[in-house]
Amino acid sequence: MANQSESVAQDRMATSDGDQLETAGQAILKLLHKAADATEGNRRQALATAQKLSSQLRAAEDRIAQLEAEVRLRPCIESSNSYGRPNTSRRPSIDWLVRRSSISVEILRSHASARSDFSR
Image (cartoon, rainbow, N blue to C red):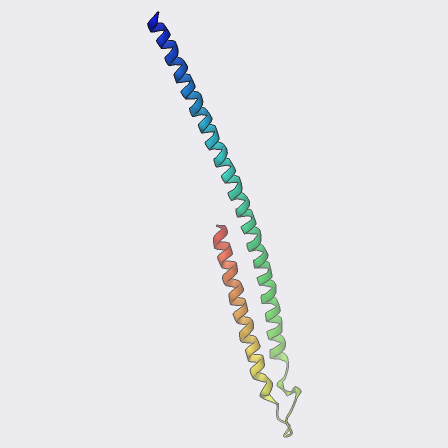
């Protein structure tokens, strides 16, 4: 009879341990699912941001190309000096504008590239 009582007690302890393991396993799985959901949300947000920046970059590049074309097509003869020669004093400011816009595009590209690397 004592052996039978010990056997029943051991079975109950094993069942109790099994229930605790099952509960712990379920808790771990819930935490993993929660972390996966949060990661997916962050990935989607990063992708949306990268797409928005990419679109803005394309628009900025198009605008820069348009402005560069206008600058190249506009003759420098708009204002002539007293000898009838083109006044080239405005040319350095136009060159500066073109350089500045190119730098801005490079900065936007590097930000967009960094964002797209992050979303992978």
